Image (cartoon, rainbow, N blue to C red; front, side, top):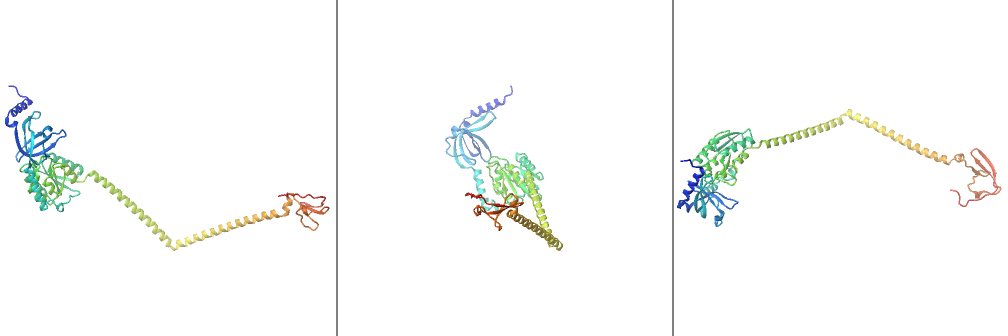
Length: 404
């Protein structure tokens, strides 16, 4: 007999399940988990109880008649058939009908415990401790094999290389998980050099995360003397541990980023502080230098010898000013005298005679200024630059317009 191909095995199992009358039309009651309404219109989810879960799909044509909005934690009864998905050999329920039965037991338990602890004040902000700014040693309580521990360690070392990490491997789901996590938290809390604790796990269904909804775990976190960051699941997942912890992170990676500063950011801040200090020191030196110069000037001013020297300089300056003023005044008077000399020279008859003009006078020496003063046959004198002539007026003719 030849070996069967994987696809042949899956086909055979599918036929066996398909021939079972019970599985062809079955009703199942359970709590919705990992619900996704795909953009195609199909619904994908799981049904679970305290012990098991089963995958389900409800196609768009069937879920159009659902009269409520399914969500995680809702308890429902579905009607459909079970078959095998040949591609991966998994079986699932192909749901044709869904009816709401109420809130699931796990969700009820979560809300009851949440209300109880909130009333006791375990979530009160006044009890939450601040995280250390520069932790030297950080404890981590999580699974040693999951992606969460790899992400936490990688990010812590990348962001802040000096930090030391103490990992306490713990169960993060199942019945023994709460006590395992509690033991890890108490152990790390007892170490004096551990300044911060991170606990959590990657995302999962509500039942997979339910270990972090344990009452004893919540009270343990509340009573720790070391600050705790809770990082359970993904962005939309909340647990009791998240609510009671000092800080809640949406993911383990986000917890690592909250736990330590970023080295590059610190270096940039350090550079800025260095530049600021340098500017302050230089400004202080400049101010002190200016103050020193000012005091030096004050001392110099108060020095009698310097004051005598200053007075001598003032006297010299005053003498120079006086001398300059006197020279300036002399120059001004010389200019005035020169102008007066010029005017006098212009008024000197001798100057006029030198230019070729003559002066007419009578025998008594009176100057005749106009032709109208001349009489016919009158004897007059004409003085020139080089002598005098005796003349007689033969005739005269007055110029009506005159000379300018």
